[in-house]
Each structure stands twice: as C-alpha cells, then as structure tokens.
Length: 266
Image (cartoon, rainbow, N blue to C red; front, side, top):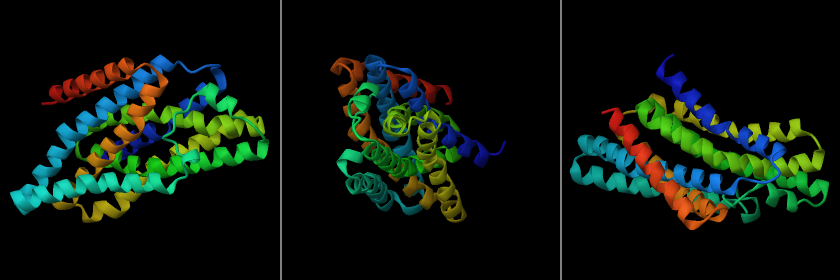
C-alpha cells in the first residue's frame, strides 16, 4: 500500500469514529463521564505535544532551510497563528447552539428532546457544523501521514477520541425525531466523512505544488489548528465531563505516550 493510500486510510479511520458516538448514544443510558474526561484530556495532551515539539519544529526547519533563519522563522510563526485564525473563523461562523465544541453527553442530549421537526433540524445542523470542523482536521491528518506516519498515528487516535462526543450530538436528536437508528447512524457517519474529503482536497490541490516551503507553511498551520482545537474544545470538554484532576491526568498521560512513541522511532 503506497503512502497516499495509507494517509487516506488513517484520515478515514479518524473521521468515521463519529459512528462510535452513535453506537454509544443508542446503547448507553448514561455517559461514562470519568472515562471520557480522561480520554479527551489524553487527546489534548497528544495533540499539544506533537504540535509544539514535533510538527512546529519540523515546519520551521523546512522553512529556514529554504528561506533563511529570519524569514523562515517569521513565516513559521505567521503560519502557526494563521492556522489558529482559520479554525477560529470556522468556529465563529457556526451558531453556538449548533457548535460541536459544546459538551455533549447521552443524557444531556436526551433531556433536550422536544418536537420532532426541531430535533431533526438540530441534528442536521449539528452534522453540518461537525463536517465543517472535521474538514481541516482531515487535512491535518493527511498531511501528517504523508510526511511522517509515525507522527500521524497518535494524531489519528486523538482525533478519533474527540469525534466520539460529536457522533452523540448528531445521532441522538435525529434518532429521537425519526425513531430510526439507521438514519441517525447514517447522518453521524456522513458528518465524519468530511475528514477524508479534507484529505482529498489536500491531495488534489496541494500535492501538485508541494515543495519544502509549501510543506512548512501547511505543517505550521496544522500545528496551530491542533493547538487551538485542544485548548478550545478538548480541555474544556474534559473538565466538564469529569473532575479537574482527571482531565489533567489525561493531558499528562497523552504527552507521555506521545513523547515515548516519538522516541521509539528515532
């Protein structure tokens, strides 16, 4: 299997974990909040560590090698914050009640159920919002996998974990509105497909013009996107789901596992 196929497969796995959230929503009466808190903190730890220690540094090395120390360093920093700005703008364009960054659980979603038409609309808008958020995540996973598969594997795991509550947010209102688990699962599943679509766009548009400078800019932007997602979404959600210390333990564990995995590939 070539590098492109592996990168697409990794992105597909990360995106379609929204389906796991659907299954949890159908079969669990309550969310295991402590486990989810630790898991989301773990995801944040993985993404922050790999972004700041590996991806940002590699982006700067590529850019400074091509453009010189001063220009390369400035462009790295600008691209890093540009990635943050991109995901922040996407956040801003989505109404807060539809925003997938809001904490979701099985019981909270069930308690919010009212009329069927409103529920269906809620579920569809949530699916659309999640698709918009998953698009840059798919690009991030794909670019990482193409350049360094050993770095991409932990990223895939981290994104997959944080996609699970998003699957709950899509499937519960649609299931309550229609009574169809299949339809609810389908919409949840489709919202996750935005990640491989992001990967496809990355491959079609970026690969033909890919060089060290383009790679460095994209990699720096990807690190900014991942850091923003971690601080804006994962850590607040981890604290909401459980105790403060649980999210912190998860965060540190994620950093330890990520650092160990990188050392194994030296």
